[in-house]
Picture 1 (cartoon, helix red, strand yellow):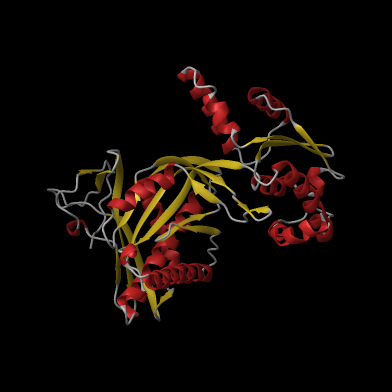
Picture 2 (cartoon, rainbow, N blue to C red; picture 1 turned 120 degrees about the vertical axis):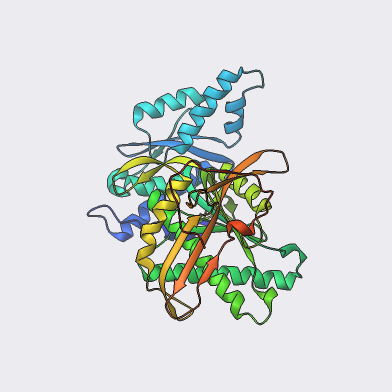
Length: 416
């Protein structure tokens, strides 16, 4: 047990970023983290089981633990359930998995009864609230479960022509893209925009998302995308060999997904993985994206607005409009030695009979015949003592036969 704990100690260090409850030393906090984690780890059984819910008791936790197969077995039953019952069970699971915190005792008992799971008791030598704090317990328990997230933005970058390169060229391109991600992150840190971003490779690119949620977090991710693309464009200008820097296409979308932690050695991974509707949509979008194009998926979802403290419904057009004001705070940042004067981002469209610009909504059919609705995005970065950086494709650069309609909006952006 001591050797096992020694191997896992570095994994536990990540939880020390949470503030200790009042009157609790860091040493005691670490000891309490280890006690709870060891109990959850034993129930987890190297990934065979998942923690589905928990509720605090005076000296411990009650938890719902079951094999991961329970999710599909409960939702689908023995295959003879009527569709209304399958729908009811699926909604119950979605509500359970979308919960980011603990359940109160009554709700916990109701879920245990519905899932027919006998709760397990984890006894602790301290009060959960005073010995760890409920937010920290939620973070630890999340590593041993699956969560459903409805409102997180995700970026997908794809290197054009990647499969035609030699393995050495491929690794150089991926390293170049990784450097652009780091450089963009450093630029935003200069303005105290600290994005808690995560990424996972697709083989020829990256999925990138913000671990934080809400309107502000999603807007910050859009800003990160802009500076990644800008750094990549500048790197391509400077490169002596063009194949050393990838030519990118990018897609941005907001949607639902499941977040989980795979087993890695003796632990759940310290970083999460995403799978769900948003990653499926992005994969289909990137298949149809042109080299150099930026696509924004069509979405309409509730996001938490930290300014008002309320959930607000935001669609793609509202969202891009909301990204404009925060961009002004980035004026003055330096790109390749030149200060940024202005960043303009907009969705493209055609000019109508009155001379106003509309926004085009594109309908893209994937290989399965399913239709995905997207918008074409442009980003123009004007620098004081340098050439402008134009990212994305103009409306006139797109194929004339691309199926499009005019979005229902009063926006009339200046397009270049």
